[in-house]
Image (cartoon, rainbow, N blue to C red):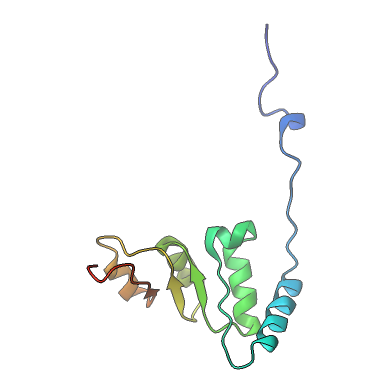
Length: 116
């Protein structure tokens, strides 16, 4: 018995996402208005939750975001290389040999242990 190729269109997931960056920025600004003087830090981990790391970051930086949080060092480096200049906090732990990258790209790190 033979089966059709797995890449046949009818077997693919019919899922798309259409991100409205203007709406993203409006929502960010509404949240920022509600918290007063506190800064809102958009968390853009996992490719901005599948919405596109770089486009979301650029739009939010232009809308007035003062900082970003990401999960991984690579995400932070990608943001810096794309021209994002505001502070970036890497939420994942610091792994051996990464400190030079944090310093080179001017990134903030979390402390997961007093022994690290």
